[in-house]
Image (tube, rainbow, N blue to C red; front, side, top):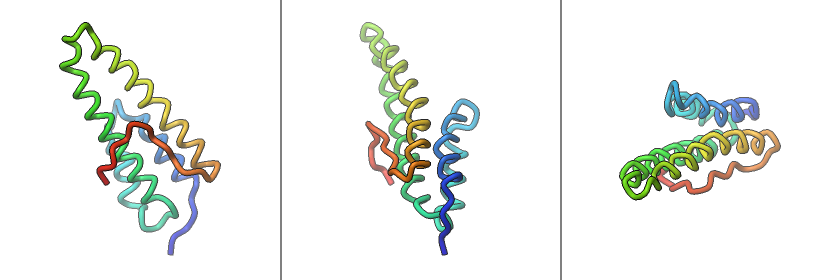
Length: 109
């Protein structure tokens, strides 16, 4: 039986902000351990993982683009802002019973 736990969903989205220290490990562990017990955790966890994997790929693509007049540096800046802002926005959305939305996210899961 699943239970509703909005706080854990919010924490899962905000745990992405620990990216500098832990990478995507914290949201991955929360998602894998709670996806069967918390309502909407599976959908939110998949959205988070798809976003994290997509951002990683975009960061990799920006590396060779540094040689093209520094466009990669602009890409790093934009991706850094997106990686910081959207976990916060989606934590607020989840706390208001809305579905999370991560732009530029490729569906892997």
